[in-house]
Image (cartoon, rainbow, N blue to C red):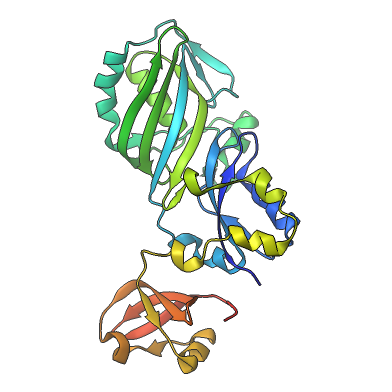
Length: 297
């Protein structure tokens, strides 16, 4: 059973779940998942885990993400993007010097109001489902981190400004744009959002969905897979022998005192013949498996 990660470039107009369902059906995959949902409007990087790699999704290092986004001044929409209904209007388009001055307030730790049309849950129900039903509700503010915010272009005649932002996982770019406009006593909505980087996954080394769908067979599909070890590069590794492999695959803890002494690790990989066979923790020289991967050696 083939396992690994795909650096997928999701096209605009499709949901993240729809894109991975196409891949699952096309290549008859047993399991598939993704890290970091992209809105249907957005395009860009969507890390996809195949088969046993799905067990490693929560362990990948994707705390930083980079987006290109473009806004149109003059209107606020209920979705904060071009698909929404206009709820406020303004003729005021701020000058670039004013945007440069105010954007400093949006670097560092920020509190955001998630869009009501988002995947946030309210008593077990997705916010966008409640919003479509016309149900009134409030979403709690969330704390996120903006590492950098750069203006790429300011077209005052066409009322458009484009930005590059690097931010923490879970940041709502639509909310960032909306809050920025409100702080300038204006309104805007996002016309385009592109995720350029998600952890180690970048646009440069990505594969468009249409290219993958056109792959003829599963053997050729393997060429697009990233090894699990390369994605979990940030987690230390210990090598195990046949005896310890058997114990780990039975869900049992194993002593690694001879290999690592009494060192402690919150996360560590068990490696058998260059294959990740388990993820776990290490305490007092004992390896405790958390996720066991059924990888064929």
